[in-house]
Length: 205
Image (cartoon, rainbow, N blue to C red; front, side, top):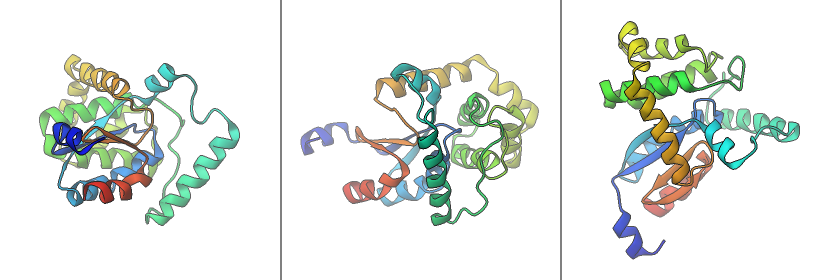
């Protein structure tokens, strides 16, 4: 991207795409706020359904046993480097991440300033406590821990507007070339993976 093009597409935010079933997404969500502060941006939290991306592009990243084994060795190694000592794989992994993703967009509607806190609380339920991403109770308890009313949150996550929001974000992710989690778009520039944060700081800090 040329300087002229960059100035035309300049935004004041980072679009942070992630799937709650992504362990790298969990590690990245803990640091993306600091990254945004460093480069003078705010975070647009964009949970999406990566399964739809895999379906569109064909194949799944962990289908091959050798690659799956490596990914989990790597992610737990990365967790230790990041100071996350108790990380574990969620029950029934891989499972649907629809419940926490919908609830995240309800939180966005009700209290957008709490979106980041909810994302991290839900991620911890899955990747620290080992809860099933497909279990609505895990996400609801994360919302409760932030002071949200459980019954209101449960009803809100089922409303059509929230369902539509998740579908729209997932479709937009596909249109924008998002193919993994985490994935950042900043001023139109794509960065795949939490290990690209240093690159973003170097280019935009």
